[in-house]
Length: 149
Image 1 (tube, rainbow, N blue to C red):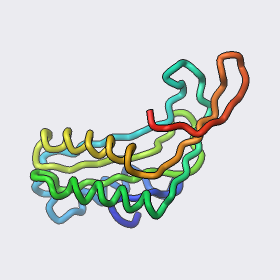
Image 2: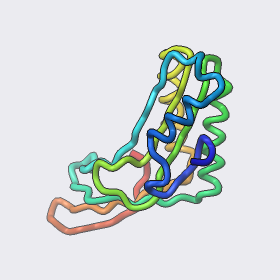
Image 3: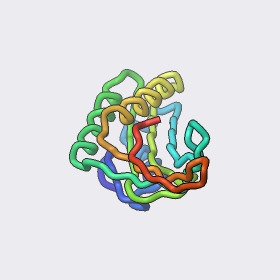
């Protein structure tokens, strides 16, 4: 795994890799909390349509810049020891992991707010594109690019 933020092909990074990297931070002994967000492929749309799979692509250079910038901003906050965002790209089945966000902080209160900000910001700022393959209510198959939800 290279760096503390970025987009990666499916299978190129694991949550365990990221946790090892966070624990290797020279200031980790100050940590009192780790917060982890794992985004997964939802098997049903918010309006009840069945999702079969999802495909993710990115404007990789800009996505890497965005994710790094978010992590850099969060690392400057008082009480934050480390911030990492790793978004996966490729084809994913329902239930598979898509993104890992890990925040290490001095106290849980530092971690919760930073974790929420990291998730909300990457969804708005990183050019990552999702194509959803679904079965419509009448049984037809359809694929479409979707916005965050």
